[in-house]
Image 1 (spheres, rainbow, N blue to C red):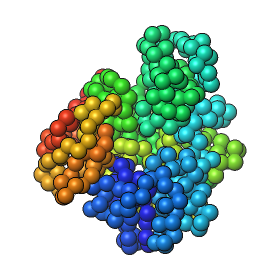
Image 2 (image 1 turned 180 degrees about the horizontal axis):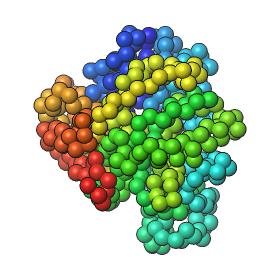
Image 3 (image 1 turned 60 degrees about the horizontal axis):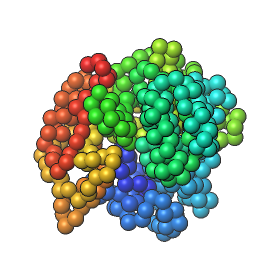
Length: 421
């Protein structure tokens, strides 16, 4: 079978790596791909948001399955267009993709179906948002309603910070039209965790748990990023918590999809806050998380193509999914200045020095005359496995030390519960 992966980041590299292991994949394409993906798939220079170009390519190459990585093409309706042309596609349609494309849509969904989440207010006007400052006390969470590449969340400690954030989002439009509407939320305390689930419309099956680190600096300091690293399984997960998440969140969400006429097929990513009163939903994403995918897929023993086809065909309940007992960690190496402005084109060295059992997933890279250079904010993800979390952690950081590019920055506390070893 010919498979097309849409996207070009670390998540897509991890998906390509896992799909390349399937004996049923005859040819793997990735559009647009990156320097790391090029070792596994034929990279095609078509942008992830060029839906017409991607459809034409898929028809010309007789693609058997298209896998959509990023959120933007999902929100634009790429699955609807592919499906209308008879191309089997893994990912939710445009209607379901609203669960990530609009935070207010998701909050209304959660409230309607009694799924625990933070209290919130939706503000369409700047003046209304100003009046809502402090309504849930401090700190105060302000979210751009639309897609903002994982950076549209600001936690304000006081009124001055909140006013500045609202000014930036709604008047300065630093996130474009994503900030035309904002959601103001109650600040939740606890430990963050992520659960990715396969969903086929009638069945929801959680993958192994993971923890993501959004802040740029150690100890969860500094501005939000798209994610500076992950590990799997989460150190706070046990059987009791998994059952609670299933009862309070996963099954109600599935029933909610069905009640609301959302034929959800693909991956549902659920960001959680685990507090004293149990798990609450922070966000829904409608695709594989990045960089959660890098650590989670390293533990998947089942053929990913089999699972994806079961989702598309509505046979997920019949699919057995097996996971390795290994512990995994992925440390993100980012460009200097990220998540603010940063330079590209920095030469990356040491990629040929890493251990053979360590995966270096490329996120923002390009190849120029055989030289690998930086081409994004999050550049690489160094992923390692071990029998214990500590073994995986030591292996990952040992290999991080072998890689270098000018301005390289990374967190030193990935694989720990922040505040506790």
